[in-house]
Length: 197
Image (cartoon, rainbow, N blue to C red):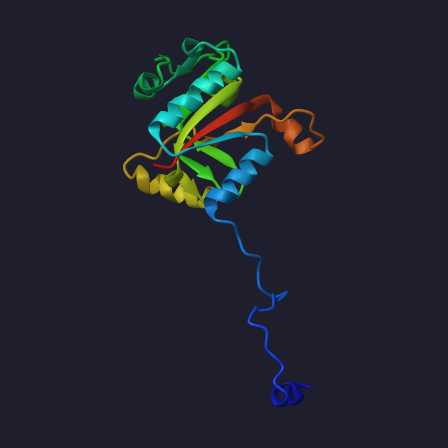
């Protein structure tokens, strides 16, 4: 058949055929993270300017009928940037506050989870934090998976590897997933203010 096609000039398709042996094309890390994060119930807010970050933070507070003073932060610089209260304590319970504003170490693309350490949450356990967590992160913090995140963490803190390394579990309503129900005690409502500027 190939010979007849060559002789009579059948046009060849310029579109390559998809082979079942080639792996599926993967989404870029940022898109894969956003899909996983929102599928699990996280609230994703993309920001291309500093003004938009602050505007979206105010909208989160309005949506939940919070005063900005009811949102706390464990980081003085972050508290000043977003006009929230800064808390100095390193242990105990903070879950009587409406929300906490934190930064993160890395965002894990393959799971849509947020990697934290004592640099963000001191020595608090996740279940001791308020039920809503607002994470301020940069697009450069997206990594492929926890393995790559841990490698970058070790390179970032060469002299002293952080303690209290953990990931945030997003709270999902009405789930049948047994594995998730076991995680439910430390799961939170999570807003992500992702900065790309």
